[in-house]
Image (cartoon, rainbow, N blue to C red; front, side, top):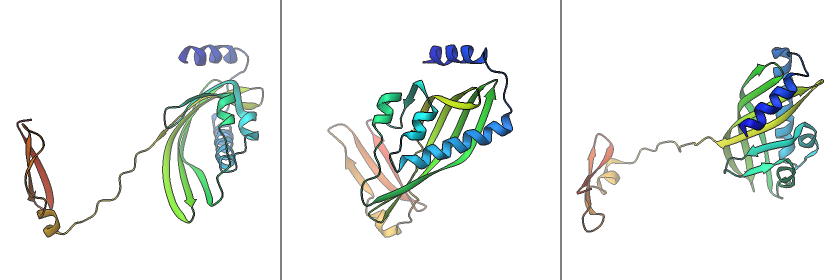
Length: 188
């Protein structure tokens, strides 16, 4: 894939001069937000417009798609679902007519009234042809979110103290100190 990106960059670079980064950063962020807005509706119109014929994506679950199969995977949100994705913390860098944008896709979804919130790291590579930007590649990964810590009563935590036999040869001891449970393995 790196060869494909480099080869494309060399070909495109020979045809188009450098770009103004301020104006083009705004344009790329606007494109990205419009693409995110189209997801909930399963609308592939803008995606088709901005994706290169050789577009390649690795999604948050590791699935790899080319343009055709990626666009075929689009579906509107089911009945009872609503949602949106906002682009936050965008960073765009340029090298001649190549742009790479990294941002957090801040997704809020409501499933039968239940609010779900997820964030995804997104890294997209564009090149400029004539006056338009075209996306060549994308990688998305879910940003893990740990649940907020909860404070359990000391009496509840102390109920877990003791010795536990993990198997025939390994045991562990759970102890309580300063509002925290500790585990120590033996024969591990």
